[in-house]
Image (cartoon, rainbow, N blue to C red; front, side, top):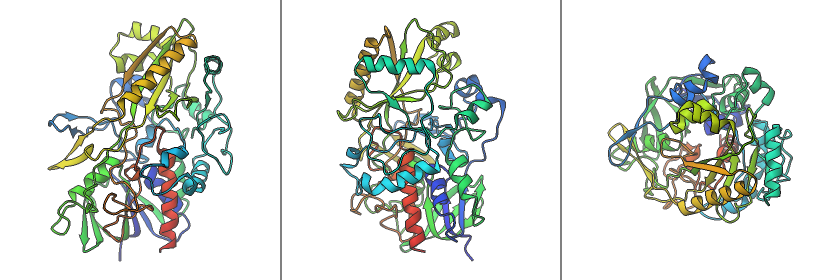
Length: 475
């Protein structure tokens, strides 16, 4: 007898939401996760432990094409990277589907609505000039602006912008009950963020047929002909009628490549030679707007600006509050100087699209992952940052500082097993089934043909719910 009807490899946003979508189907679903549950501890709200000491960063390293090792900053816990995410749940804009996508916003719209309900998103779509149509309002009103952010919104309006609420999967009262800190890049240990574990898996586990095994690393995928026959793991050989890879854009691609065999010499699902290609990682910068006014905000991350989105420049949203320990650790500043800046700054995150490029890719070298990220669209990002700086000075911030994020910051990695109609130029069909294998699916950020310029979590969740419906219909 097989170990399950469906095995899902990975418990991040894609795998966990897929499991939630399969609840009540009668299918035996086993989720295998290489990490463990993220337990509460004093370090969970200690910025020095998180940002200076890297308490939660895994020891894992990848290689650059030149052979240099670096820590990629990805997390291995139940819930994946979502345990540390900023909880932003934005839809791709309608125009984002115009190139490379085999489906449009209209196809995903009902699944976006279901995902917003599952993750209890707080928001108001009526303010944002770029927001696509919704067939239902957000489940909850927006997370309220703190006084200094409400004042910022007024200043931005006077400077000619249309700031709007940031759609967030956050239970504010529950988050702040654990500690008066921001949630962005902080671990969720009390369910204050609605993440892949606290929202999706919690819902999935209402079905006793859905189970989780932690501390299990998948080493290789076995195949026979056009079917997957087993997973070779650190916990033994596992079998299921259907296998779903949801290990993240880099690890999913690496596992497919590591599973090369005589029948599949270039790796699994790779007849198109697209596995690992088109790696994207948003062009992103931190922008600190400094003035004589003291910023007394605790969490801050409730506002976004999309006035420049239609021009192809991207999205601007607030970062979680950058405190003195965070700024000292990330910028290498003495704490007294970091304190002066942090206490008088409002912190922004400028994000631009990284365009698909087949030469930007994940490969393997022995047991190592090699990441050759080739940035694209950088001029548009520089233009976004310049436009933001100019407007912030107009809004009353005489000093505006910026710093780009590099490959050590996983800014929404995606694209390495893109979905599409054409098996010659994509890895999976529009529902996430591998073109080359009858019973292998992918359900994570690997599927995204483009990165757009918004946070991808909600789109991954919507694709997962769509795939869940398909798997139930094809039992």
